[in-house]
Length: 318
Image 1 (cartoon, rainbow, N blue to C red):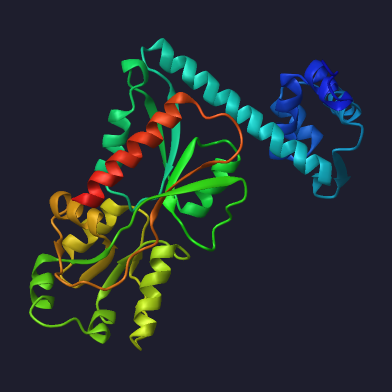
Image 2: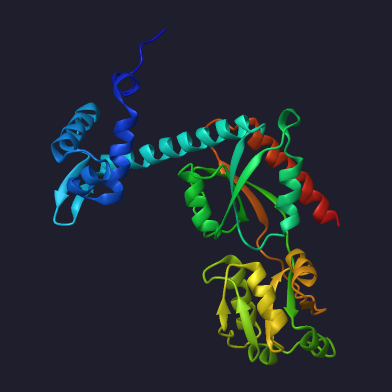
């Protein structure tokens, strides 16, 4: 058997947890004085630990500047790897805690807000390795932010929207299903809008509740108004919360929003909005499962992906 490369051997025998925690603290606090306070130790001890770490890597990891400790190019790489290792360690601890409570494992799942709740609920319920349930922490945000966290090993997988503007480095993706948009409104307003063809100039004058800027869905809504020759409306509320959007629309006779059809159906039930019976003739960027391209995939993660595919196929068929 060939011997390990020199650096790999040194890291395997000399790198310690205290080194990872030191790197994390320097990245978070910026100066050795604040790092020493945070770690409840002396500044000379922190300075020596950093010197030992830099000797291990054979090059400086930080330079001192008026703004504090600035990572070198190597330092930025080492910091990112340290954060990844600490995130994996945290997930490992949660898996052990889940096993201690009779669960199979713990998954961290990123999800965009505009997903129907039943998609996640059914997929989680069906993920039962060895007959045991898993435990899950759901993290809601925009696709770009969630994918950054996926690459940093903070998340096990992400359910978001495929888009040409997303950074896909180091990731693999799988389209689950497509969503059509629906216009939702207060019930009385929806009844009035249903009596005649939609006029985009009239719609632009209503009170819009929309998702966050620079998301694929928001950009498509803006583009649709522009292609109709109408200036896009300025929303009176922006929110990533589907429930808040539904409640605002249901409470205001002049409020409207565009959401995916499956989400609109849920908002009819839980918030009391109405769906305006009009098809737009376009679809939203598809709902997609993102996972890291490299590294081992745990059995629980594989089974969760399998359950997502099955539930998505059922919803698409319905």
